[in-house]
Amino acid sequence: MDNAKTMIEVRDCWKSFPGKKAGEQVHVLERVNLDVHAGEFVCVVGPSGCGKSTLLNIIGGFIKETRGTAKVAGSPVNGPDPRRIFVFQENGVFPWLTVEENIGFGLMSKSAAHREERVAHYIGMVGLTGFEKSYPRELSGGMRQRVEIARALAADAEVLYMDEPFGALDFLTRLKMRADLIRIWQAEKKTIVFVTHDIEEAVQLADRVVVMSKRPATVAEEVKIDLPRPRDLDSPGYLGARDRIFAIMGMDVHGGGAGDPR
Ligand SMILES: Nc1ncnc2c1ncn2[C@@H]1O[C@H](COP(=O)(O)OP(=O)(O)OP(=O)(O)O)[C@@H](O)[C@H]1O
Ligand SMILES: [Mg+2]
Image (cartoon, rainbow, N blue to C red; front, side):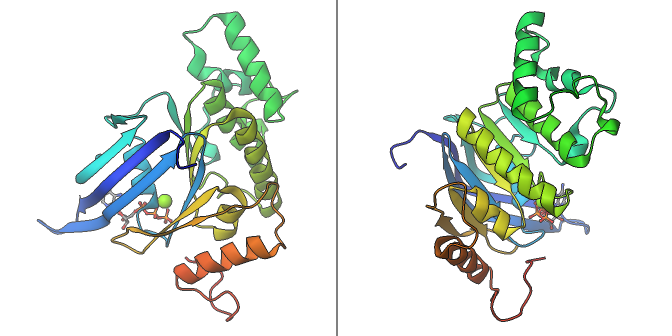
């Protein structure tokens, strides 16, 4: 992995926001360093409000760091880029477009034949065949989330930024979506940066889990998850990695303390 191409490079990144009182600054990120290789699946976890979304928004080009640098594919991030797509929670789809129109949205400049082929391919990949003409209101939350993912893939984004994308889904749907995302990631070889407050989700998905400290946040530790996929959630390797991350975040899973960092 060390020889792999670096896709995302964050160096000594700081971010403050103006506070409520005049002249006050809220320090959110401090000295954040992060490298993500091309094709890697990285999860970012950390306490609520520590700055995970802020970091993702910096590398996604939606907000500017106060100090430091963020580069993607070797170039400084200077705003959103269609080659790098955000997958939000299920409400990111356009309610007035059908499933196939939503998925083809980023392909308007392409020929109709090319668009149809890609849309059909990704509808199949995310398991929405038969729902091409449906509107988002006619779909379940999990299905809407699949539309989001298919849209990002159809647009041929090289990087997917995912901010708690499964947060609004019920437990069983989340499990299914995780398995599907891994299958799609393995087939498509995208780079994925996935923010979640759910440590178990992170250990199920990631090649590497980046653990952030509480605000002002920095990278407390990175935990490599060198386990075969699909992951065995009873295996000592899985449980060990999970418990290690809980410990980094100051929680003892066996001590009857909070099982959720929030
Ligand atoms: N535009 C903004 N203006 C002022 N403060 C902001 C802004 N965006 C974020 N913050 C503050 O920055 C801190 C980090 O917010 P952020 O949304 O990045 O946290 P998070 O780790 O994603 O939290 P959660 O797990 O709850 O999603 C919070 O204290 C928040 O109030
Ligand atoms: Mg957030």
